[in-house]
Length: 488
Image (tube, rainbow, N blue to C red; front, side):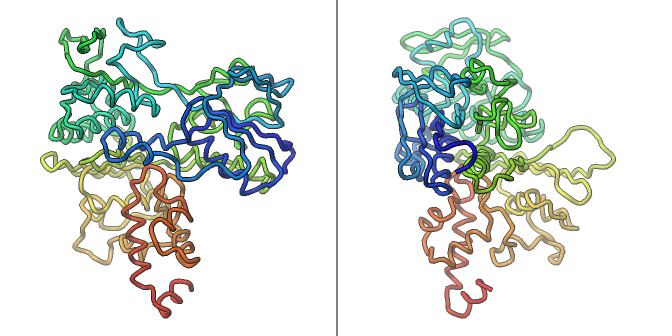
């Protein structure tokens, strides 16, 4: 065990805390690990809640497939009310006083309730809900049953996932967004316009550049008053106005807090005996709010705490945002950039009627940002080029349109046989093609076995088709001769 001692307490049993609880036992056998989770449920995949909302999966389908390691004491429904760094103890909602050698804060974030007349953040009306937790999802579904119309306040990523999920259930959905285009953190105005048109065809109407000014919730419905004087009535209002890191415990304990709990490259807070990971942590000025960085932080921290690799450091990777909603294929990555820059090569293609938009930002023959919306067969290639920092093809049309007259210049990465082992297939878990091949060599012959051996597809699930394609390719060459070639 490392210098941290052998009593580790993890506060939070969300996606970051649960992953750390699974990582630690694989690296040490003598630690006493306790996980305290405020929610009553088993750990679940938060980013799959939109599929639960859409009726694609049941609650069992969002549970995390990997349990905490053997011998770990997981206590759901137990909230930590105070941390005493000097005594190295935590106090729980049950009145227990627990000592630790190292404490890990994985407290996540809380959904923001806007300060509107008619809303009390401590007690929302029955027909109003935020969209963050499994309980929130249950609340939305209970009201949506029998409902005909829903409002979503907020046109960011989560808001649109909630809107599409409700529309899939047959509800008429209206999204209210104060900015001039949807998903402004990831998209430019042109892409936002194409996305709004696509959503309209799927039963979701966007009201842009207008804010909410008041909420009137009654037993039989809810009315949202807009800043332009209009009133929108519905059976249900979903608030998706952002998430704030849950830093109450850290602040009360005297730790350094900015927007999140400030951590260094080893995920240590201002107290060397306390770490923070996931949505509550702020590293190099950034709070990510994404699953892939949280899981990478858990991996690095497990290496450090167990002494497996005391030199391990968290290094953020460029992130790819995927909108996981039926009928919409969207990938946004890097900095799409705005304005003119003589050193930047900008390329774009738009076909609003077909719901297709592509924009590339290239610097020094490398992709620094991209937006891919709609049916574009090159999206996998674009993500791989961005992830690996590889040179883009001479014929840029292969990336914008997915085809090329100059076959020799096309990037040969769509075929699993030509995809390099270093290509990242599962962004959430940083699973590369080589890891899938090694798992196959070790005996995995089904999708379930590949998932169990590599964790691929257990994040947002958007890589499932790619993993199935690689499995199909491996299965097709499963002969003594070709298997030997793959293993070479």
